[in-house]
Length: 549
Image 1 (cartoon, rainbow, N blue to C red):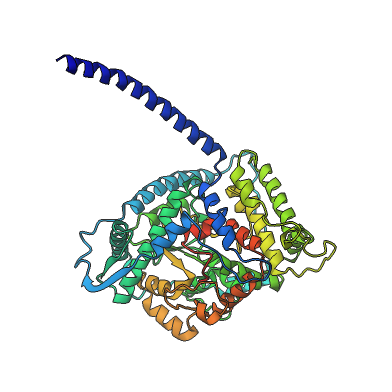
Image 2: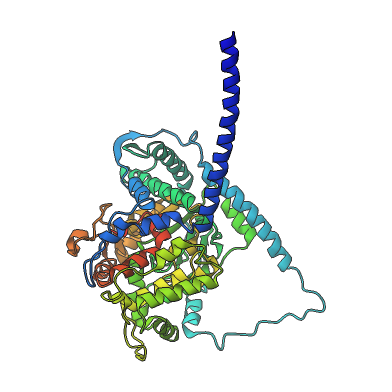
């Protein structure tokens, strides 16, 4: 009994000491977390891009082949998900869609967004009230005499537009159920292999593609969760979404990501021939034929069980090269281009990044408190040997031609100067603005996350879902396929032999080839900082800087 009481007193005494020790340890951990919060701009960014393995893997000197080493954290997570293997069978996943549960994440997003649109509808109704008697309304003048001739031509061509009804039934509800089933199955087996079955109403190939779309959905959801502090702050992109109320299709259009192709389809659904329209006129026609509905109409569309909301993304490097050749080299915004050139010409990369740090300070970010960002944006290397520390070009040269290197340096400076400032990022030109800014994929639940390297398969599937399959077959036969898929293989950039890395052919081939060519001319620090400037696009959409697709 004595030994029992003594042991009990000893346990109580040491139990109290243990509690005090645990409390002190907890306070210490909280202090460490607080300090890390003050110094952490984006720890995963720092680990990814400032790692020694990354720096050591980059090519030495100028003009070396374009390559990256293995990065950690996000890169590893994305690559592991992209490497999930599917074992396809000919069996049906189920015989009926009736008992398949809906996607809970999608349902939660619809409820939240519906409430926001309901508030917006009330606000729009308030704005539409008759003005006060003391208020003199400005009556719009007749702009017909001064209207741009090209826009007037588009207005004339679209004046008698009539909606061409879908030729088939909507399969969107079935797709929602199939995608939810696939997402749940892949999520349950993150390391794979995943046994993939077929879905009713879809062919074997279409079913297989739905499984890959589910994987794409999980890549995006995981990246959004890891970067919620920034990526989740971008608002829903209602100003950028075109709504086709006949098929209940919502399309968030991104420039230099196949937007003209999809817009041409939607314009033709209004019985308007696009063969006589330029790319710019097709965009004007979209604005005329698909004006943004009022908030109450958006809310009605949102709760429909057959709504299909989608966006298309592209490998960031290919998109930048496409913007350079298609816009910068063709005389796009000549006055602004002179300002872009002046901001980087005659400066070393080191000077440009020091100016970028100063611009970030002006956005109320203290570099003294954010050591990770300071390290991230500091140009590395030996100032006595590296071209990154030498003046690039003659500052007195007023030649309006902008080289690709100057364009890349301008993008690096512009994107990073807006670091974590959404309003600033939205002011960047839409042709090279980061893709996540405009379509806000972390605050909008897209039903289809399409990509340029699977453009035809994505488009074909969506045409079937909204009952436009017959139209699309005729359109492809008449105009040919704009982008022809080459499967899901990836090609590393450790070799400049284009045939070994061909991903997009047809119209996309020229930009693929030029991307390999142009990126190989950049210094290793330009390569690194270009990746940093587009880091979230790589992470959210599952791209690797090691491959061009």
